[in-house]
Length: 284
Image (cartoon, rainbow, N blue to C red; front, side, top):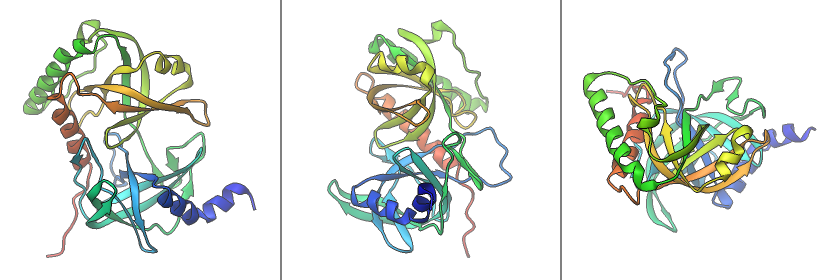
């Protein structure tokens, strides 16, 4: 039997090993088949806290200590990664609970154990025959002067608030006057949101850019739900090269210089996830 077929057949063994070593899974909200909007999927990464034959218990998604609310009954797409291989599956939020961990009592989600998983092709790591994930684009720059970013963060917050009030969506701009002191731009794709930062996929042509500095300025495009690209400062935490020779880069949010920006950024991400959830019909 080919190795890939064998791994797929034994995916529960892989899931159990992830749980035993304190690893995680990724999830995103599954869109309805008739959803033709321009919105992108937002993937969150969480630790596996418990397993049984019917359920997987994972951390409730969140960032910087602020939880993202997910309704019971919400359909999800799960992503299981082992080395360079990925599998996707369909599941549903069964309910909420709390779990004791080394970090204390934490909120958690109970999701249905899938009946099967499907392996993603390496050249199409974001799709399978029954599901596809479309990830947001991120513009990135090496941040030469972190202090220079503060006025632009304040202006971005005002811009987004004004656009929400007016019911409008902004056009993105590369106007140098709209940027702090930065180096050359490179583009990336948002892979996931974690408890304290984001994971980006940077193509191999821009690998030198990701190696050139530790503090970066980012513009995360969550339009039209967030009406203008959301800006933030982040520090490079770790990198590794994937099977396509692209760089996966993990970044930690950095609100050291402008701590007031934290609640705004995390709040916009939480609102984005909330808006992507379909209405759940509850029995009377």
